[in-house]
Amino acid sequence: MQEVTVPGNIIVHKNETLYNVLTERLENNGPESIIAEYKSGENTWDRITAGEYHERVLQCAKGLIALGINKGDSVAIFSSTRIEWGIMDFALASIGAVNVPIYDTDSASQAEQIIVDSQVKLAFADNKERYNRLNSFIDKHDNFERILMFDSNALGALEGLGVAVADDELEKRINSVQADDLATIVYTSGSTGTPKGVELTHRNFLWIVRAGYYLVPEVVYEDSPRLLLFLPLAHCFARYVHYCSIGSDNGVVGYLPSTKTLLKDLRTFEPTYLLGVPRVFEKVYNAASQKAGFGVKGKIFHKAAVSARRWSRMIERGQKPSTQEVAEHMLYETAVYRNIRGALGSRIRFVACGGAPLDTELAHFFAGIGLKMIQGYGLTETAAPFTVTPVDETLIGTVGGGAPGSSIRIADDGEVQLKGDNIFRAYHNMTKATKEAFTQDGWLKTGDLGYLDDEGRLFINGRKKDIIITAGGKNVSPIPLEQEIMNCPLVEHAVVLGDNKPFVSALITLDEEGLRGWLRSQHINTEISLQDAARNEDIREEIQKYVDKANSHVSRAESIRKFAISPSHFTQDNACLTPSMKIVRPKINTVFADFIAKNIYTRG
Image (tube, rainbow, N blue to C red; front, side, top):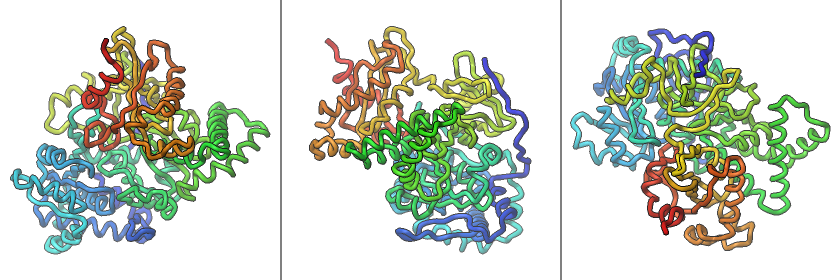
C-alpha cells in the first residue's frame, strides 16, 4: 500500500462560509473592481462591479428571508450558466439555505426526483421551458411551494420583497451560518448507477478553493485572471472554478449560457484561462485538423502536430532543443500554433481539464503549441478537484498532487483513497451508501485505479467497475484503448466491450461534423446517411487505423478483435450519457444490447 500526506494545512475557521469568498474579494480589491461580465447582445458584454454584485446578493438574501426561506431549507436552481445563477448561489450561502443545483438538460422526472429527495421548498428556473418542467409536478408535492423564473426578473422580484426585511435581521442570519453547515446537495450524474445526493459543507468548498489559490495561483488568482464559464454550474468542477474566480485578485468571470457562438465569444471576451472536459479539447484539435483538410495544408498541420508533441516530450525530459528543432518550432508557430491559440482568444494562457482522463497525446499537443494544460483529479464527493498539476509541472500523464493537509493512498487492489477537509459528509438520505463509501479507518473509496510516483504525484489508469474480465479470465482496462480510438476525427464515442465475452470489442459512434469534413476531403458524398456511413468500408478503414494503434499498446488478449459502428448516438435522452457528458456503461450495454449481439457477438 502506497500513502502520502502533504505537509502543512489550509485553514478554514469555524465561522467562515462561502459568502466570505465574496466579502474577501471586496476587502482585497474594493467595490469598484469589475467582478463579472455577461452578454446583453450578440457581441456586447455588460460589466458588473464587485460592489454591485455584492449588493444584489444581499438584496436577494433579504427576499429569500421574506419568502420564508430559513437556514437549512433546500432551494433548487434549474438553469444554464448565467449571472443570476452566481448571485443566487451566494445569496443562499449567506443565510445558510441549501443550494440544490439541477442540470439544465435534466428531464421533468429527473428534476422531480431531486426536488422530492432534497425536500426543495423554492426553485428557480431560467426560462419558460424549464419553468414548465418544474410546474408539471409542483401540485403533487406539498413541500414544493414556489417557482420563480430568471427570465421574468426573479431577482428583481426578490429585491422588491426584501425591502421589508431589516438589515439587522439579515446580519443575524449571516452570522448564524458556520463552516460545517450544509451548503449544497449536488446529485451525481450517475455514470455508475442511480444518482446520489452528495452533501457538501461550506468548509468543503472553502478549503478546496483556498487550496487552488495555493497550488495554481498563476491560473486562478494572480494577474487579473479572466474565466469564460460555459460548463454548467450544476457541475462541481464549474462551481469550484466560479468561486475561485469571484475570490481572486481582480478576477473576472464571464457567464456564457450557450456555446452556440463559443468561438466568437472567446474572441470578444478574451479569457486568460478556460476549463473544459476532455471532449471539448478533442473537438478543438479535430476542428483545427478538419479546417486544414487533407491537402497541402493538412500535411503541414499533421507535421506540425507531430512536431508539437515531440517538442513537449523534449521539454518534459529536460532536453535542450537543437538549432534545427528551434527553427522548425518557430516555423510551425507562425503557420499553425498561433492560429490555434488565437481561436481561444488573444489572452489565453492556460486551459484546465477535468471530469475524465485526458489522452496524453492530446496533452502533449497543447503543451507543444504553447498552451499549458492544467490537469486535475477529483469527484463530486471531494467538491471537485483533489489534486492538480502545478504550472511548472512538465510531466504529462500525472494529475498532480494534493493540497497541504491532504492525504492519498493506493490500496492493495490499486484503488485510490483520499482524506482531506474537502471530503463530503454524507449521501443525502442514504446511510448505507455513505458507510460503503468509506473504509473502516475513514478513507474515501473513489472507485478509481491509480498509483503514486516517487514525488507523490498521482496517476489514474482506470476505474474498478470499468475493468473488463473476458471469458478467458483476462483483465482489461478499457479507457486507454478508448482514448486512442477517439483521437480519430470521425469518432464521437468509443466504448470497449468484452465482459464475460470470448474477446474484446468496441462499439463506436460517429462525430457528424468530423465525418462530413472527412467525406468532403475524400470526395465522397457528404450527404450520406449515418446508417450508410456506419457500413461504409472507407470509413471503417479509417477508423481501423486508430483501432490498430490502440491495439499496439496492449497484448493480443487485451486487443480489440472486432468493432461495430452504430448509426445511433449516445445521448442523455437514451440515458447513455450523463449531463457532464460521461458515458454510462451499464446503460449502453442495455440500450444497444440487440445491436451488439447482432453485429459483434453473433452466435453460430
